[in-house]
Image 1 (tube, rainbow, N blue to C red):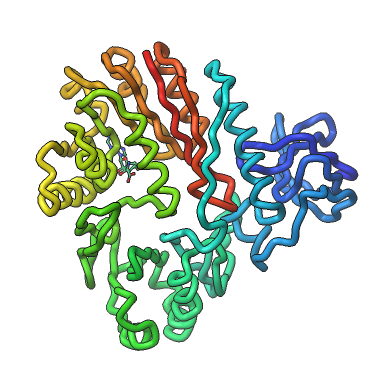
Image 2: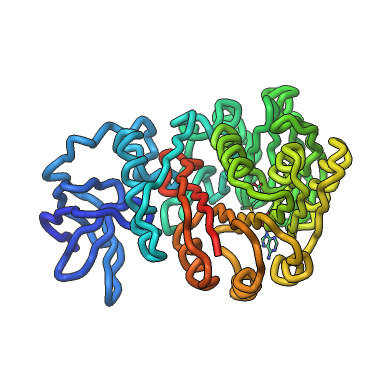
Length: 406
Ligand SMILES: C[S@@+](CC[C@H](N)C(=O)[O-])C[C@H]1O[C@@H](n2cnc3c(N)ncnc32)[C@H](O)[C@@H]1O
């Protein structure tokens, strides 16, 4: 069904245009404030609709031609149809609306990505039947791609060879996805199998050369190939599992960590959800006593190795659930840092934080909805400052750092 002449007056959570259709709110990707379009309905619920543009009737002066041929089909990017400066303005407005819910109406500093395109050091290519690429938004359909504009040049280069390799060897039913990750001029390629099987990668190794390292996994296990990636990050020697969590935009990550270090007060820091420990390492080198708490055993092992390799004697890494470990280390905290996954923190962690004494809390979040929910759950904290880091340029996501006090 086509809804005629929808005018867009605002932006939704993922940067989609918001209009009204038949008295209901409608969300339409790739539209801008002030534009008018005929829209095909793709979803209808009792409270809202979703749709896609079939004809643009009035264009915003902010509109531009997207450089990627898959934009609008592939679910990866959300903002290639407008300038980068307009994207940052829209993201700032979205964050400002969220933070107003917890009483923060002051300035938001925006830190842009040093690279608008070619910044992403990790992408996951899904393997569908006859297709290798990213998924359509809100769908399981795989969009077949030859390249990706936001991926780093090394990753972008490898995509078409991987695709040809999968097609040439008819591996569609054997693989579920392929994860490419670049660190300091070396790129790992993880072939994730649907069921355990033997695959000969010699042909692919020959075309890609020694700057690419192939390994295979099944479930949570690496079954063949490289298990350790030796690299240097933020001046620290690292030996990581190629599977452990890393920030995807190295340029923005450095700026985020710099800001975190500058925001710390006092001597004793608890870094909760600490991943492979690079931020903990950077904080220790800046002179703080750091306790890192991380649930993932792989990430914890990496953090321990980082401590050994760099002689970080003031760093103590704990492996466990934040809900269980935070009450045990909560005695003498000056600054509490949390950087949870998109789903945010559990109710138990929020309740523990409400009872802790600290001079400052730094909450780093890649999901402003759960950030706001968690601040409301903690209850007795107030936002002092907010910075938006555009970790995921051209997509609908961004990273936020807020400092809070009791
Ligand atoms: C967004 S990452 C942050 C990583 C780190 N701060 C960095 O900059 O690399 C979130 C981390 O939280 C960990 N995590 C998830 N649930 C957790 C929990 N309940 N307790 C502790 N850590 C958890 C994940 O394994 C992941 O490494």
